[in-house]
Length: 81
Image 1 (cartoon, one colour):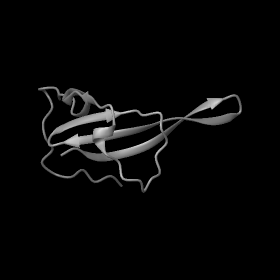
Image 2 (cartoon, one colour):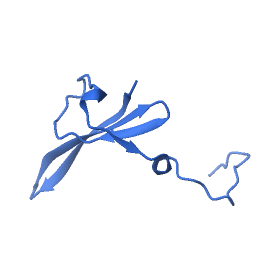
Image 3 (cartoon, helix red, strand yellow):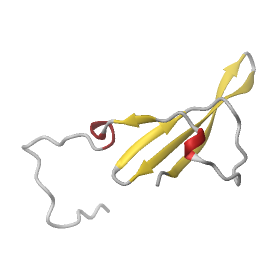
């Protein structure tokens, strides 16, 4: 089952005004992530059916980029004063 993880409205500058552009959804199914950009404006409390959206896969490397092999995990928390 696909679930909506994040939902945001995107706006663009039109002269001195802001105009609604689209809604952006981030969706998750297991360990896979997807996005959708419908032009329809959704109410924040509206139930979203991911099956009604045109979804696109987000490559894992774009979510969790690989780390360099010369990095090591820190063994203690660094305290900044």
